[in-house]
Length: 294
Ligand code: PMP
Image 1 (cartoon, helix red, strand yellow):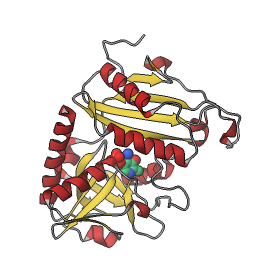
Image 2: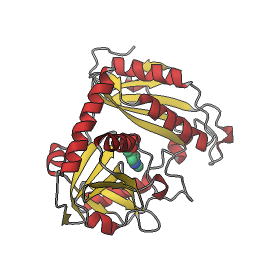
Image 3: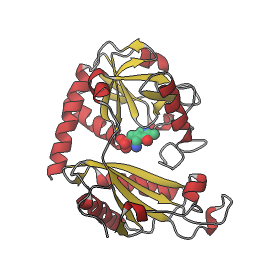
């Protein structure tokens, strides 16, 4: 039985709400052994998941791309997420929805993994400090590169985050908050767990997904908001030079929402938080409030 006094994070495993201590997968699960699986990070506000259908659609596409069959319909997963939110300790938080390849014999061949495992965890968010939100993040350009579409398509949100983790370690080691990963061509791909936007002369730029960015739900929301606000936005390849010479820069993600960037490899951003960031961050807040009330 789940303790609805709700002190602990809530878990859902293969169809049932379970106490965290019972939320276990096997050490023979290929998700654990090989990073063979896909996932989503979903935010909920006022008891409502933000853009849940978009997340479930991306999950389904990620799974299809790796020939992993999710043993639940979108309707069933929607209900599961709603159940987890209803049981969560707070009306605001973060959900991790994971589908692993499941248990199979050792060896990477997934063909004998017969039961994909699905679990959903809700927890509070501890991702971004107040200092970063107000003063801006310090970012570095990591030596670790983003895997290209010729290695692992960036649209697949897979359980393989090791190069992102290595990039984040570089940032921590350098005393920075976040790492920006370049693609194999040396152009900007994205942050270790967020998408990147720069502003130049009032115009917004972000790398196209094909440059090595996840097709972020928050990125998409920001592009929609820019259009509504009459801010010209373009998806074009960006070099480190474009970051270093930007007027403003900010990061977007489910956990991050919108975070201004204060320094890029030691170069101060002229405007942080800049006016375009501020308009978009306010519009995003409004969007969340509107969509949470629907
Ligand atoms: N890129 C990466 C590598 C991420 O892990 C995330 C977080 N899911 C993002 C970008 C931002 O995507 P979203 O806005 O959908 O959270």
